[in-house]
Structure formats: C-alpha cells, structure tokens
Image 1: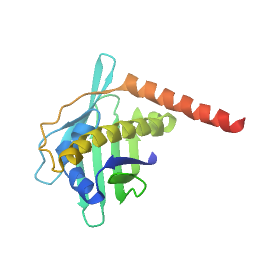
Image 2: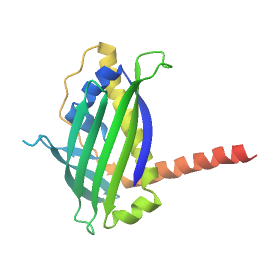
Image 3: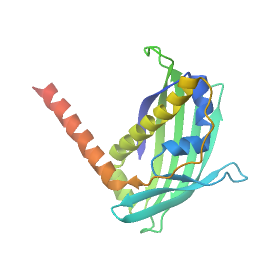
Image 4: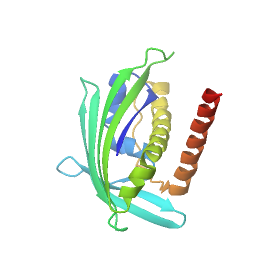
Length: 194
C-alpha cells in the first residue's frame, strides 16, 4: 500500500526535526501507540492498540527511526504482527520538512511518503480502504503534533516530555472519519460536475 500526504505543524523546520527525534514525545501524538524503552540496537519496541468495540487487538513490533538534521529529512522502518489471523505489517515512512512561507507565524510543512506491506487479514483491508484510513490517522497525528508543538512555540523552549499516555485507536472512530471524508469528496465532486 503506497501513501503520500502532507501536513503542517507550528515551528521552524530545524526545530521540528529535533522534536520529531524525541520518539517518546511523538508516540504520544500517534493514536493507539504504546512505546517501550529504546533497545540497544536503537529500535523502539512497542505496540499499536486498536479497539473494535469491547475487543482490543494489539499489533506488537518495533520501529527504527533515522534523522538527518541538516537535510531536514527522516525515516521510520517498522514491523509488527498480531495473533489475529496472521495479521502482520511492515512499513517504511520517509518524510521531508520544509518552511511554509505563506504562514503568518513560523510553520513547517511535513511531506510524507509511506509504503506498507500488509499480510494476512490486513491484505484485503489495504486494497479496500487502507489509504483512506491512513489519511484519517495522519490527520489525527498532525492535529496532536500541532497541539504539542504549539506549547513549545508559546514558551519558546522545549517542554520536558511526560510519560506517553496510551489511548487505543478506535476502529469505529476511524470508520466514521473515513465515511465523512468520502462524503466530503463526493460533495466536492458533485459541485464540480454541476
């Protein structure tokens, strides 16, 4: 599954890349992420917890980040699996930061390119709705990251990171967000066709 997107966060690109390098802080912004202490090899073990009503499914795995502070780029490589019908995922995310010259205050545009390999029960999901769900998750992450970074911009000094709080990713919330986005696209298309 290939995905490309972009979002904006407050702050200059050089500051934003340093904030992104604070992996525990960024994990707080990712819906459903649970992060464990960093391993000796530099990777971060953890999980993504997804709820389907009262049921919870935990995808356990690890992610390895890499950052180029001078080039304002980064990459995340992750693998995970769940015991649910051999569900497994491998993902590579590359991002580039650039200044947003149109913004009234310092702002950074984050351009993302992601390729994911989904196996087991997730393979069908990738073909039918994976990109739409990725858009919803990216929008939620962008909103949370913007709120987190706005605190730094207000005090002009990085805030110390608290322990990440895990909130499961609710599948029904994702579904409704995807449906809403599809209706909005349909509405725009209908306005264009008229």
